[in-house]
Image 1 (tube, rainbow, N blue to C red):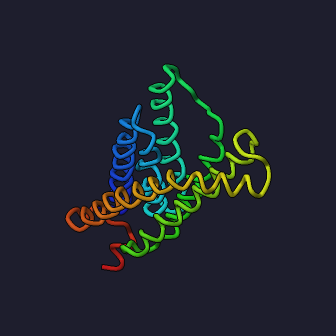
Image 2: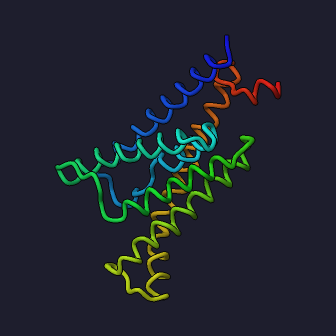
Length: 194
């Protein structure tokens, strides 16, 4: 099999994995607030960054999956299609940075993935909650207002951490296992190292 065909099969499988896991976000519609942010999206961003690298595909696929699932979830909550919501730029910026963090994982190990999952939560927390604070709508535009905003977001970030840990285990573990049994899923670097 040619390298080009192997790469196209690998990319197709990676895209299908991301799409299927993104669909797991949709049953979140109407769930209790205490599960907010327990989704696969952070893990998807890391996974795409790791396996697609710094190519535009690494950013496009998880952000598109986030956008499409946002539309479905917003329809479930509001009964109408909501393309853009308050704070969307901050949310998508956070997930784009998560893709970058995933691209920094050069060798998939438990420690590297764990550190990536933790870094992704910290990035999400700092960026999205800064976006909440900067509007001045919910917290005063003071240092104390920013601190309060960050503190009140901790339960949501805890759920994101659990989602990242569980879904990263499934995604990275499952794909690394599959590469062992299906050689067409191995990258050129995997083949050269073997």
